[in-house]
Length: 243
Image (tube, rainbow, N blue to C red; front, side):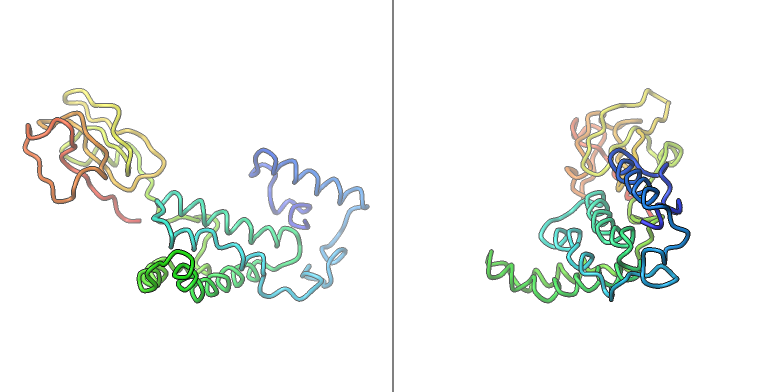
């Protein structure tokens, strides 16, 4: 609340109903006579919470991104959104003035540690899951929240623009991840379909190759197409790096 009142969280960064909540906080604090320091409504001069707060239990319970990444095969975009939900649930406790930011990070890591210990047996008991397989997936999906950067929350997502794909040969339009290419280039005119998130760049037509591709995921990685061997599959998919 103090961060909102002081403008540390800019209203311009918010959308929709979150702006309404922002306005409510500001109005209520103003109606209370206003405050000159966080200590006016917290226990200590630095504006710390009025009760012991380490680690944050709301954060510990916010484990959507972890357990979902274990029981499901999330796409990079889905994992990104799930982690954002977990972080928002956690950081809201700081916005509320009851936890320091690092309380939330400790809580996120603590909650994950609890799931690491309990989830394999739980899935075995409830769904007869293979404990070894679950444990292996857990090791693969464990995430250290100390590395989370709110300014770049999902660095594993690859962002690309037309000039990047235009440099990849042989040419043609491209689809992303499981999406089929739905627009095609004209002869001699390289064109790349725009997207916000790319995990693979799939050449669709151009040159001597077929121009009615399936999605990249439909093309086995070992497949090599002759120019006329298939009218339905793209001849080449390129994994974009880094990220």
